[in-house]
Image (cartoon, rainbow, N blue to C red):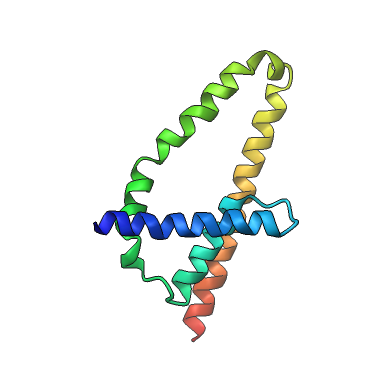
Length: 117
């Protein structure tokens, strides 16, 4: 019963995210809205971490399965992208490093902000 309740809480935020995507005219995916709303709810203690931790851990453990379909899709469209694969790989590597730098700077900001308090 505990897992079902945790799953329902996460599904509630998925639903809220999809609703935000429908109502807000911005090109942002509903999953992003849902994650942001869940993060805010966790930060302001509306949702306790214990209420979603077990199911979130399970989702994290099976996350690799969610990448199978996109990998198969890339194989399926290979004839269309074979001429630009070098540019795609360069773009992915650049995006990776930009993400790493932004994540590091954000973590530094929050760690320094926490230490000052």
